Every structure is written in C-alpha cells, then in structure tokens.
Amino acid sequence: MDIQGWTFLIVGFSFAIYLGIAYWSRAASTGDFYIAGGKVSPLANGMATAADWMSAASFISMAGLISFMGRDGSVYLMGWTGGYVLLALLLAPYLRKFGKFTVPDFVGDRYYSRTARLVAVVCAVFISFTYVAGQMRGVGIVFSRFLEVEITTGVIIGMVIVFFYAVLGGMKGITYTQVAQYCVLIFAYLVPAIFISMLMTGNIIPQIGFGGTLADGSGTYLLDRLDGLSTEMGFDPYTDGSKSTIDVFFITAALMVGTAGLPHVIVRFFTVPKVKDARISAGYALLFIAILYTTAPAVAAFARANLLETVDNAPYAEVPEWFTTWEETGLIEYNDLDGDGNVNYTPDESTNELVIDPDIMVLANPEIAQLPNWVIGLVAAGGLAAALSTAAGLLLVISTSVARDLIRRTFVPDITQQRELLFARTAAGGAVIIAGYFGVNPPGFVAQTVAFAFGLAAASFFPAILLGIFSRRMNKEGAISGMIAGIVFTAAYIIYFAFMFPELNNEDNWLFGISPEGIGTLGMVINLVIAVVVSRFTKAPPVEIRELVETIRVPRDLEKGSETGDG
Image (cartoon, rainbow, N blue to C red):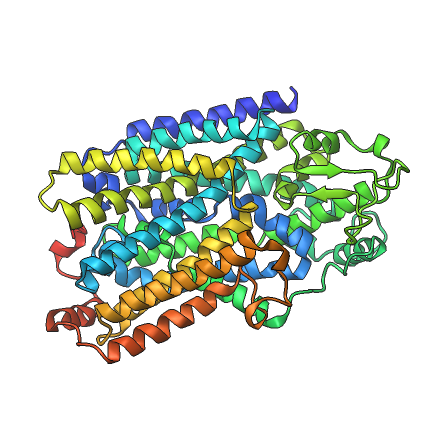
C-alpha cells in the first residue's frame, strides 16, 4: 500500500475513535462541559494533560527548531519542561483547592472585581487564539502533504473534527478523546525515532543513539558527524549556539513562566475529584511528557544529519522523491541561482538556493530515512492528534470564558444551566471558525506562534495567579494594573518586531538584546512590579479575601462541599 493509502487508513481509524469517544462521553450539564464533572481519574487526567500540553509545536516544530538551531533549540526543552514542573508544584494544587472552573473565575473571585474578571477573560481569549493559530496551521501542514490537499482544505477538515467533539462533548468529551490522542501521538513519535536510531547508530533507544557512534563502523559520534556536515556547508557547528546568553535566559524563562499561566493547561486540574488527585495527575503528566521531550533532541539530530547528507551539493535531478513531494506543499523551495543544476544549501542568503520550513522535519523524517509507508502514515496521525488535542483544549477555554465568565458571572447571573450550555457550545463553534482563519493565515511558523502565546501568558496571568495564592496583601487594583501593563507591553513589542517591522527584528534593535520570543519575561517583571507597587498604595483586600488566601494554602483538602468546583 502506498503512503496515501496508509495515511487514509490510519488517520481515518484514529478519527473514528475520537468521534466515537466524543459521542459516548458527550456533556449533559455545565459541570460536564467545563470540568468533566470533576470525576476524571488521575491517570486519565495525566494522559489528557500530556496530550493537551504537547501540541503541534511539541510534536511537529520542536525537533524541527532544534534541527536548525542546534544547541539554541534547547530553550524550548528547558522552558516547556521546567514550566510544567513549576505549574505542577507551585500553582495547580492551590488552584484546584480554590475550586473554580476557569482562570478568569479565579481572578474575578480572588480579586473581588468584575473588572479583574473581564481583563482576565480578554487575556485568556487573546492568548488562546494566538496559541490555537499554531495548532490549526499544524493540521493544515499534515493534511496538505499526506492527504495531498490544499492547506486550506486540511484546516477545514480539522475544524470539522474539532467542532464535533469540542462542541458536543465539552471538557468531558475532550478529556477522554485526549487520552486516545496521547496514545496515538506518543506511539507515532517513538516508532520512527526507534527505527532511525537503530539504522544510524545501532541503538534501539533514541536517547542513547543521540550520544552514540554511527553504525557504519567508523567510530564517529553522531554529533561529531553532524558538526562536520554543518561546517562543511558553511553553517555553525550543530553543538554550538549563536544566541546571546541573555536572550537564551529570557526565552527559557518566558516559556517556563508562560507554561504556568496557560489557561487550557490549568483548567485540567479542575477535572479530578480531589486536591491530592491534582498532584498525582501532575506527576503522571510530567512522566508522559518526558517520554516525548527526551526523545526530541535525538529526532532533531537524526533528521538534520539525514537532510544534510541528502542535499550536500546534490544534483537536483537526482534528489529523492520525498524532496519533490514536499516541494509541492510549498514548505521546501529550490531556486537554481547559479544555473548549475545542483542544490546549493548555505547560510548566506545571497547564494542559498534552498529554503526549508522547520515544521516539516519531523513529518518528513521517516521519508528521508526511507522507513516503511505505514510508519509515515502513523506519523501523520500523530501530528494530527497533537494539534487537534491542544486546539480542542484552547477552544474550550474560549467558550467557557465567554459563557461562564462573561455571560453567567458578569452580565446574566440568573441564566439557566441549559441556556449557559447553549451559549458555551455556540461560543465554541464561533471559536472554531476564527481558529480556522488563523490556521489558513498564520502569524508565523508553528513553534514561533506558540512561543508568542507563552510570552503573553507569562506577562499577564502568571503574576496575578502567583500573587493571588501567596500574597494576602495583593488587591484588585494591583492585579488589574499589572495584567494590563504586562500584556500591553508584551503584545506591543511582539507586534512591532514580528509583524509591523520584521526587517528590524534583530539583536541590534531589540531592547536589552531580548527577542520577541523572550520579551514575555520582561513583561512579567513589569506586571509584578506594578502590581506590588499599586497594591501598596491602595486599599487592602477585604478580610474574607485575606482569610481565603490563608485557607487555600493549608496542606489539606477543603471541606467536602468545595471539592465539587461549583464556584
């Protein structure tokens, strides 16, 4: 069977499973729609959280970025993994103990303010749409290559699938669908990595193969070979970094702290019955995430080595079939500038004849390594699972922010549960349409777009949540001022350099040498400083709020009634 046949078979089978689970676990109440009734087991929630967390950026883009950035790409590994540890230990148990459905719900009640709730809703929607753009783009890329359709058509197909199980099932449907999606994506990521590790290094474990010697008997280490290939073609050694230390620090910190402020991940800890279960599920999720994240550097090195050996001044007429196939998607572009018919791949833009989108490296890797067609189809299914799982979580955040935080908790407090559920589903449907537009017209490649979302989350939500849990003195004036200042500064910086004046987007023009991907860290500092200063010069929170802050930090579960998360 050819690649397309295997892809149709495996992707179609996985989609049938997702839709079947969504129908079986469809939401019957707002509790089911928002937090799956608060009855998800820690193991299932750990797998769902891992799938929700490991988006198209993790599956498709992260290894691609490391392939092209070398050591500099480690900022994504350190930032995203470290951020999850920060979230699991510092915030998740306390937020679960507070017993609210959403992050704006927490902000609104903790800061006893409708304005604070509205600011949090705006931040949540803005962050979620920025993030979901990358997921829908990933869906389009996978469909465009493996099902041989236009990226726009691929995005529309993904919209239909997400619409079905997000709108019908809500958090309950999404949770159990994500359990299946985790199984698909992790299997799809590991199988080709194991195959290629055995072919290149003789090691069945990719993490060992990454630091091992080549299987050709030369005794050359894989990374030494990769350094040699890179320098021969004029690139910096793969194991060297080109980013400044300050930018590496700020990007890593923005990704780390942004992780702890992402609303679609935080809400997952409201789906378990008890605070203890939130801690356990966080541990499971970290284990499930680590399986992929420790494999990614090996996948990146394998893909980069195979690619360089393929295009090392090779005659264009003799390039492998995978090269010309990916050219049809527009994600590889070859321009014969010197007319010699050879592929000249160099870091010098004036002589470089090959442009490669980093997002294809994981997807094309099995083809480059000439693995069986069924493995290529499996990788396509894994990429779709990663993108769709996160997209669904983000769309749910948007719908709950609109239905619960805007309509029920702000404008129509006496709304019935049935009408609230209708509004939530309508909002989810509208969000799917907008997300599809961003998938067709993305603001950047997948991981870059996601990095922007993390910076926005770091600059807005993290300080408000952290101070809301650990500072009795933090009041509504401080939180509102800090969130507005942080997200406006960060968004303005990103828009200025990444979209308005991309020609100025270089280290010479950046503030303190900090790139747009890392500016969220500075936005977080601005948020913290303004929040603390303003709170010191304004009225202290009410007594009951200060007592509430003390209560949620007590290391035991609240009374039984609060565990329902009814808010």
